[in-house]
Image (cartoon, rainbow, N blue to C red; front, side, top):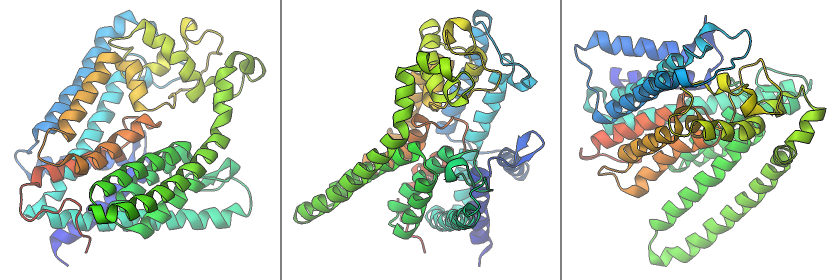
Length: 421
């Protein structure tokens, strides 16, 4: 085995550790953040100058804009932080903390881009990376399943699952785990790795992740339309019938499952004032999605264009004029409605518009056909719409993979969806 191949294999497993082991920390620093910092240090020491393409420079400028605007609006926002928060979460410092987290995410995309360009073997490197990225996540999925089955017999909270027999892996809860595995299920699907896809879908189901199930539906619909576009007229009828039947089945069962789990959220939102009277200590009601769905529009109305500052939703949501009849909470409330909606609250309409302009620039203005760019747009954006915060690492992995492909698309031969040997 060549040194280059061993290097790419090792890198694939490091990426899995960065993405999956979100709760392992070295002091206050997560292991993923520490790993990315060490990689940047390694590249900085090994090379006198680091090549950074314009796409990453534009992204850096946007993230820096978020920080600058946060301090511009700081004197004009009334903050009501929870009690006993650490100093890095204070209204003055949380924008800086979130800024460095976003810079680490951008650095992760850069490291993926840089590493897969190693030794001018871009197509081969991508194939090796994909193969071991699937293998590593499949191994963890099997470990989760075994832990789920054996510990589940005790019907108590275990290492890989928690209350209501819900799989969580090494994430805090089942939602982020399901959303991650729905993303890599789709990534495996368009590489035609069907066994991996099935295994990853099982994890999504056992995680009981509403966001993961919705993501699976959206990913499959995109895959179906891409697939239809690539078939000739003689195959069209058979393909459309087959794919439509599968899509209908998936959609039907997913909608039923999502409704059974999500109907209580909708009921609580519609009757939030009455529900809170009887459930003043229920954290699922006074914090999280339901509370944010009520509080956030009030904040946006007050600060529509520039927001309240990066990371500061949690420091503003306790203001009486925003929460009204919702009780004040002393815990750190992330909201749970996803990075895009939270960006609207914290950086305003201008921040969200600039973010989407950047995404259009990154994914659409290039030589890559739209049908081949759309999967990566979906893998980067869908998680942020479905509950994931912007500073989770795995969407940025797909940005790094896309930038790698975009940078090397003119090389011959270069296979967009590489054959995994």
